Image (cartoon, rainbow, N blue to C red; front, side):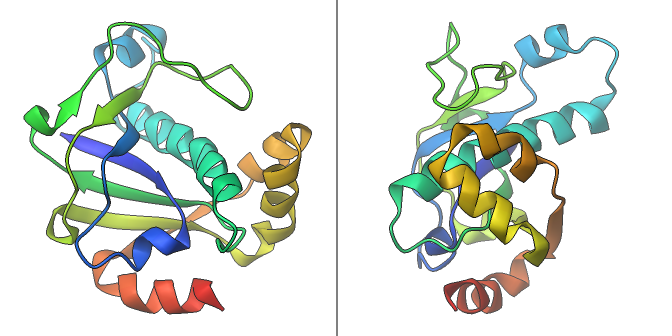
Length: 160
């Protein structure tokens, strides 16, 4: 199962992988909510939901660079629990039903790609970290695709 994990630059420095957390995936509920979307569109929606949620992680981290990070990984379905009902959501409240509870650490070997805000997004992401009104501006920026082999370089680059 492909999952999208909201993250920060600090997560990229973890030696064992990404610890358990809420993530996003193409769930049956997401398919029902977006019946006209193909698989690619549904995956993009789940990834963008993870990007929105990465703001929550940025707010909680005093050392995080103001850039959204999403980690895409392939995990066994047994590592993920799809909640019976929507979970509470902090910013916005217009969250699509893509949330999944990832119950295990996701090792780096299971990561397919890393997606990070472009440099031009820093100002809007920093504003979104402090103000819900700025979330939409941050969401307008593209996430750049990076291969997993770039993880350590990205971690150093985003650390400043």
